[in-house]
Length: 334
Ligand code: NAI
Ligand code: MG
Image 1 (cartoon, protein in one colour):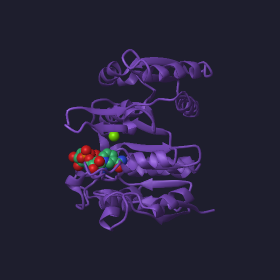
Image 2: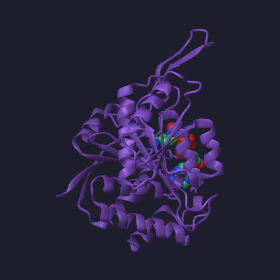
Image 3: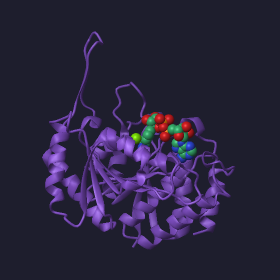
């Protein structure tokens, strides 16, 4: 049966990389149909809300959404579209695999790290932001709950099992943020006991950043709070060849929104030169979530082959190909 996907092309390079990705999905002929929706700057330009109700309804209706990068206007009282969607649909976990592609020039070969980031709590969720009238004092609240931390830890350990992983590293700053990070770590320790087939490791976030750069092969699955996960997953993307290659999945109990980790790249928007790989790999994660593993694998293989071979790649990877030429090549190799 056909599965309906809510498609949000997004801002900046979003439309370029989304049409490229949809072309590959169509070439796979895996029976997806699409409901197009808008958000972000594109929605504002059409006189709609940053996240129109119609968009929320379409995401609600379908099991999955594929989302291009969204520009959140700075300093106009708008809350980030991504944070809004994650909270609204209770997408509590963010899965960000960083997997080297043989042939891509980067600092290390064979990096294979999955970061699982708590997606709705903590300092990143932006609760309670105030600035005093004289502009001299600013405040932001961080809330961590046992309930949410438990749900995330279970998700992380289940994912580790499913993906045949051997170790989960819990990343925290409980030595300083004793209340919030301390609670997160406490929950991690208790859930880890339920999974004695998987090694449990604890690491303080600043040390983790250093270890990732010095010795990325020691890592397997990283699970951490929202802001730390935001930063460390970009670091991991950098280890494997950059943001143009890194996909992400926001998942809840009944829904997933799949995307690229990078933003709308206004500096190269509309030029048909953006690398669509990250969003394509996000679409492959979506196929996996829909249990279309064979299609996901076919798509991933073709992308990894073309990127690794390096003959037809976009400028960010040192190539000369346009977004559409790269996409044609991926389709030829499906
Ligand atoms: P960015 O990720 O858009 O760009 C950073 C650098 O990487 C730029 O030089 C850009 O050209 C390059 N780049 C990014 N994606 C690329 C691709 N697919 N192919 C080739 N080069 C690529 O980050 P930046 O500039 O900090 O943010 C721009 C806008 O994106 C902001 O409005 C920000 O809020 C938004 N953003 C949205 C995200 C989302 O919707 N998931 C995530 C991150 C930022
Ligand atoms: Mg980020």
